[in-house]
Length: 130
Image (cartoon, rainbow, N blue to C red; front, top):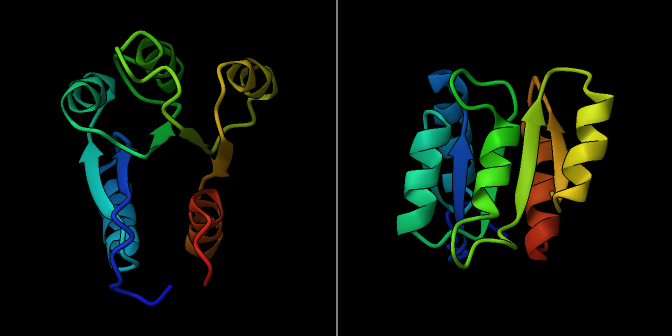
């Protein structure tokens, strides 16, 4: 896929670090994805209830409502039980990984985020050929 070619796929990036959110939004947008950002779990749930997303990139460690709580809450949003989620974390959370795999996450993205690796995972998920 060439840079700037629209895939029509909507991605929600949820991270309490505005620098990471902006970086991911700009990077993925330039590669044809429609990207929105949420600053925390409550913002993410609000957007998920009002907008159809094809994928959520969800940070685990956030204040107020962590990524695990958001993931569980997504399961209760009508029509979103199977919303694909990739979790992002810089922590070594073996027990958390096992638990979230039971909640049907699609993949893990380790922080600091490698943009080429992120793009490869997102493109592979959507079946986009580079």
